[in-house]
Length: 333
Image 1: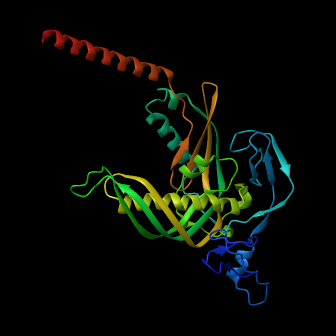
Image 2: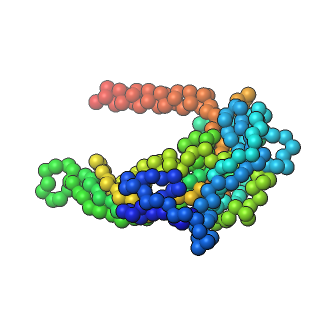
């Protein structure tokens, strides 16, 4: 099957598209397969693959293909052993895979360092927390790219000399390009977790055949591309608003409005490396997520009530001392 593009905006169309997701124009009919089809086009058409060793976690709902050599099965996202075996199934095949760069010991070092660095965390957190699970997981993402042509308007706090208003209206246009915008396609990591551990260096991604996915934990794609595209378009608009405000509006900006025309939008499914860590502190279980390529981390850290109360008391005492000092000065006057 040959690649299809929208006749109006030239965005790439998926096999199931009846209308262009970018401009709404009716999609042209697909071309039948023939002997002249290129290898790249055949790869575009090979959207699915058969996965084995499939399991669904009964606790958190994670759907994954598990390490074929694993002796004990445990969900890497929640630690549950309540895993339900599933038959072999066709799922989205990744076009590229980002390999792990961070090893197990490095992931635990990052977690321990974050435990010591937090201002409001308990002082004994790094010493008393017990890591109960560390699992390398290939997490699915949709990677989007597009060109943008944006018309923008905004108000600037920098006004011309002699102006009586506090804000000055500006407008203009901007052309940009986005590559490798990632939208989490799994169903277990939260939207915040999926986005906060980004970015991944996609230039280091390799074909799936170069990674032993049969002996790895691979979360399956659960977010269809058509829904991921909607989130990607929203991200493109947000990104253009930030770029236009930062590039063209002097001083502070308000009422930033953008009208974005996307062209050449395309997507591909990829797998990204993520370390999932679970640790227990004072009978409570916490989860930590680390980018397996860069080490960027996000996760739950307990808060120390004693530190918060102590800081509040010190603040009240300082405020009370200042009030007494001011009162003494006023009486002396």
